[in-house]
Length: 281
Image 1: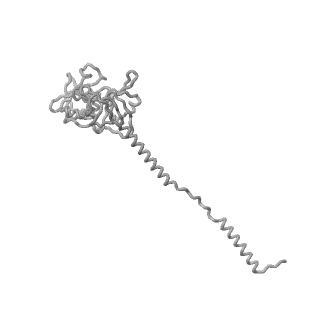
Image 2: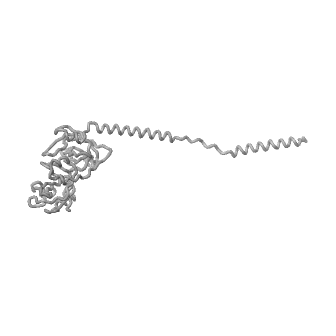
């Protein structure tokens, strides 16, 4: 039998233990976590770039929308029969109707500076339905005047996106006897308060201008101010028909009632409001 010295045996044991320890360390070492790429900075940069691009596109679109557009002051100063282009906001509309295959409607529109009456503007039923109060539109047509009413005729339009605007009725009661003062509010949404229902051909109202029409047609009525001056108002049946609260409220008027009325300041040989709200006080 081969003999080994004590020193050799001890050395062998130490080498064996070292090898076992190394293997154990290798087996129990924690796994390396893969590096995660941080793209947040790149994402923010892309978002900023997209926002800038969208802003530039919006600016270009706005510039195209407003090219050649008049301010209200420029429109008011333009001669009759001049071609005009305005950006305005739908406030209300008379009923859509079709004539020889072409749809038409009349619109009451306004911006923060003034108002525009768009008479018989060709439009589709779909667009008519889409043009709710506040809708921003671009209109090109011809400035016209009929019996004192200034309007836009032969118009074309484009429905625009962006902001909306619905006018608050301006109280012009104190100007009712001053046609020059009222003319500055032509076609705007206005209100008159504390007027008195005056006699009109022996009644509080008539169907039609001369009373020759019937229920469902336009209603005309007279109101007087504190000085006894009498003014004519009308409920346009295409704007507020016989089934509306406004139409029914006027049908319930009695001579001598004190009333408030709100509507659009149309003009026919003088102011003649197209009434949208009528209230007995």
